[in-house]
Every structure is written in structure tokens, then in C-alpha cells.
Image 1 (cartoon, rainbow, N blue to C red):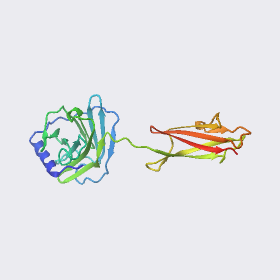
Image 2: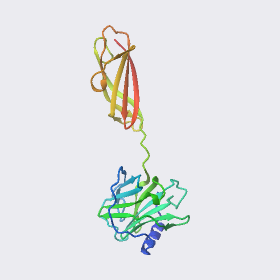
Image 3: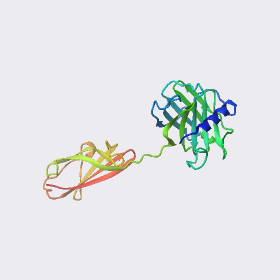
Image 4: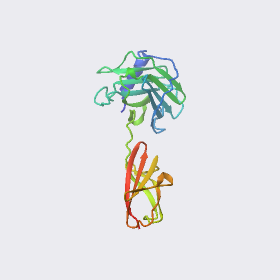
Length: 276
């Protein structure tokens, strides 16, 4: 998502004419469960250098807050500004040329929200905004009721002269899509290599492999069970993954089942051994 220089110039003119709703600096309410979006430092030229954006929502009240961190001191002097185009229907084919239906604008002396009317972004009546600025942070709070939704695509765009910085570079989605996790395999070391009658047989967990990243991680929970024929064996040790194999069971089948969980995802693995 990007915003054209023509739109930036138009917004600056509106701000100079006093058409935006100007508000004094204030402090935004404390929010819960913020979503974080990062942007590289040093890519802004003269524009305010955005390095991090946190978006938080109170679903009950509709209070929505953008906390924008800057890589260098910047108070939006020298015609600096920050804009947040909001694609509230998540359809890039509607709204302005960026796909946005609303545009939050923050200047050195005020802030406001514009609404797409079919041909242009124009001021409209909205609830009061809260704007707080420090050397390296700009916090903007407003009511999600004014944009008609609590889910949207967006970008945070800073500008000064012909220079702009967009964070994140490819735009963001709020709330972020749920991360897909697939537990691909369970990695372990058996000791001994095969269960032996009259001896202890232990599985030493080494981790689980995630399909999306091929990463091996420690599961949040892990538990083992084992059956020798129809008889359930009593496990011991971490996760119950160690069993004493009864004597005179040579040739019988031992079925070991491992249940793992990681970040809300669960998986079950089973392995059959022949007792030696």
C-alpha cells in the first residue's frame, strides 16, 4: 500500500486551511494485546524514520491506538507528517488509489481523519482523537466506530518534502492473520535402540519439527503411553516416556504413543517395536 505525493500535498493544503479537526496533544489510553509491525531503520531520507508500529484495540469500547516509533528525533517540524491509510473493506479495488476508505493524518500542529466520498478524501465529523508526540514516538488514538470496523489493512506513511517512509514496507493487516503451525514430526532417541525383555526402554525427546519452517522446537507439552499387547505399561520420567519391559515378553509388540502440543496445535505419533 502507498500514498501518492498528490494526495500528500492535498492533505497538507487542507491542514493549512484548518479543515482537519485539530486537537491538542494528549495521552492515549492503555491498550491490550498490541500487534507489532517492524520497518528497517535508515530508509526514510528526510522523512520521519518509522522503525516500529504497534496497533492495539479494546474490542469493547472500540478504542484503537497506533503507537509509532521513530529511529531518530522528529517532532514533525519542517512540514513533516504521518498518514495512516485504512483499507476498511480489505479490497484494493475500492476506495482511493491506494484502496483506502479512510485516512488518518497527523501534522505538527494537529490531526484528523478523512473519509473517501467516491472521488476524494474529505473531512467528516468523528469522535475526538488523542494524539501524543515525543522525540521518537507518535501515538494516535481514535474510535474504531468512526471507520465502521475493527479489522482492516493499513500502512503508516511518513512524509517530508518528496521523501516518504512506509511501514511495514508491504503494508499490514490488523489483526494479523493467525500463524499456521503444522507439527511435522517428533524427534527422539530410543535407549536401547530396541526394547528388550526385562530391561528399561526409554524415549529421550529431542524436539518436534515444524513443517512451515523446518525448525526443531521444544514442545509446550509432551506425554507418552505404551502398550504391550493389550496391557498398558506404567511410564516414568519426563512425560512418562520410560518403561520397564516385563520379562518373558520377547517377540511381543510394544506400541508407543506420543502426544505433543505447541502453540495450541496438537499432534499424536505412534511407533510399534518388537521386543527382543
